[in-house]
Image (spheres, rainbow, N blue to C red):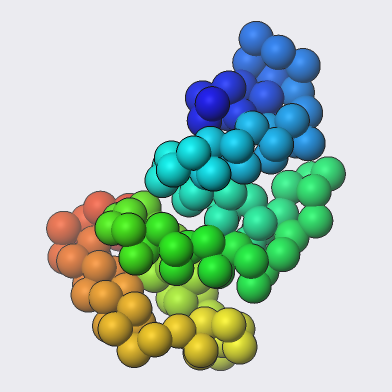
Length: 122
């Protein structure tokens, strides 16, 4: 289901449709596919060209995935937190995250920086 949703999103082998992509990724999320949960969180947080963003729901889904051990969701939340810190306009949703989530995100971001994974190595 998740791969079909990606095909719908990018128009690979099927007609491109944001609505179909969201429909299929939501089905996969409901079936327990953590990768779909993270994709859905990204899409809801950032929005799609023909699909409105829903930042609070995106953050809730990231939290859901983090609680189930998704390192992709942790990385996304660390990026969101880093952007908010850099632009001095933290989202109210980010400030309401439990302290253990914020500490986890900070540790992951530091490890990524040290290892040069996903960020420029300092």
